[in-house]
Image (cartoon, rainbow, N blue to C red):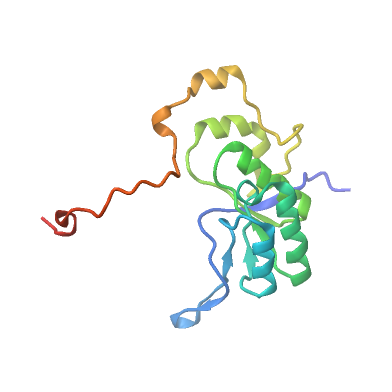
Length: 178
């Protein structure tokens, strides 16, 4: 029995879609799925051979069980799953747990600085030898203490809203360069 803890490879940045042949003979595999909101839609795309690998996000798609449905369908098609892992600590860890449970080989690793998220994930997002180690803490593996909450108070100005506002067309001056 190996003493090496279970781990997954990590990648950063965007992963792109079905193999595209570029000038000079370079082939780039096609990937997608980070914004797909249901397993049904991603599985339809898998069955239509749209992607060479997929990137479900547990926080977008409906949780770990939804990503597990994608792992099962992708396995039948021989398509790799590389979970999408951007967002808050809970979102990232949900995708990582799905990757370990589904037998993933590679995960996306967010490169943006997010001190609260880093603190909440703590040693559960540990990387050794270029590989993410399997989380071992109870639950989803994050911690939120009252001390953390005090250090990172709610900022109403930072709230992102999806409410659509009709601001009308921009003035003509918007389209002219000085």
